[in-house]
Length: 361
Image (cartoon, rainbow, N blue to C red; front, side):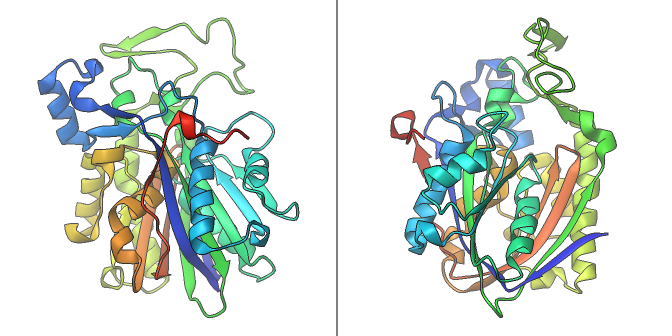
């Protein structure tokens, strides 16, 4: 069983950055009119989305701004950061690793451990388990987990099954080795037989980009895309999410002998309102304990959990002690849940970034 238990590593701060550009689903022509748009918003919960549309911003730009702000608010010196993990499915390049570029942009020491992880929706929890495990021995004292995606660039603007759901964001989570700080507890799982439920068929090394990759096809009414744009099998993903997420949460709680009453907030990957409410209902969690950022930001892939924490819980978490359970599920197919404590969390307001503010690497 993929259970991970890390002691003496504390989450000290979380920051999030989104593009300044906003798209409004109420006026999105793809949805075909006010009635259809209202039905979509009512079902998914997604009214607005911050997107990189036409700005040239990359995931690394958003993560850089979040990390830079967080380091300043924590008053950490750049030479104090011992490790950096970048989790994304929209890196700057096929190679080199974007984590190496971010190490340089942030002015971190050349003794810094840096690595990329290619995961989507479950990426923040998987990344957290990786960096916490690295730091648990105490040889690395401070670390940065950078997660995010600019998934709108992978969506067909003529695909109403995907495009109106997604927004773009980058986040930074700061961790510190602190003896006696408590435990971070994880449960994770993978089911690769569903790999093609969410995928981009061409452009990798299995199916190279070719002369057919950019040919747009009508998949069904209202859904046009090419083979460099995302496929989302909605019914399969919905069934997967409402099955695996509750099981993962219950497995985690049972293994570590915790009850739902021990948790102050449950933060789920922001997939869509219908799916998330089904998960909440199955787990019998009070709505007041389950924050949503879907209306303003949409589904932001691996950024969705930390973005929701910053956007919806910052004012609470900045003071006092709180226990959070976060659970994510999606592309892979993979899923992961975590329980962690916060104490006087450093949590700056969500950063809005325009193309003119971009710091060129």
